[in-house]
Image 1 (spheres, rainbow, N blue to C red):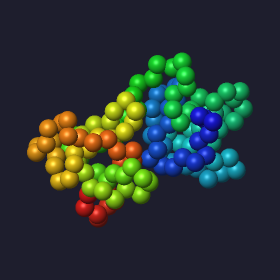
Image 2 (spheres, helix red, strand yellow; image 1 turned 135 degrees about the vertical axis):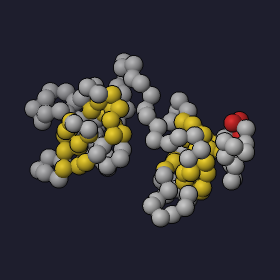
Image 3 (cartoon, rainbow, N blue to C red; image 1 turned 90 degrees about the vertical axis):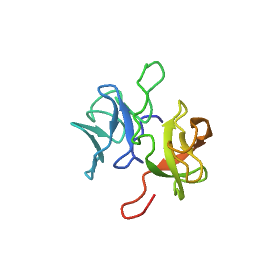
Length: 136
């Protein structure tokens, strides 16, 4: 279901009726795992209170909501690691933009926004920041 937040981890984004897109900043390990965003706690079922009848936090905005686009954590030219196969990204690229389908467009090879025209940016399924201490 769209409101099953049980597989989420710190840094993931969820969409809430109350605040729109929010990044998970903590997961409290209690009897009922609790997802923490900036100033709000949600159950793993997406409810604000366990007694609520309906969820108010989701993986993506429910149908019928005119939600803003998901925030992007990268800026044009940032070094990123990308992949189309798995979330274990190993290919180094320079970030360009995120399209309406959520794919990250990056410049090929060692090119960047300084050395390549924008139309050479290729979409990738997975994109992440390089790990600390690792050059991206």
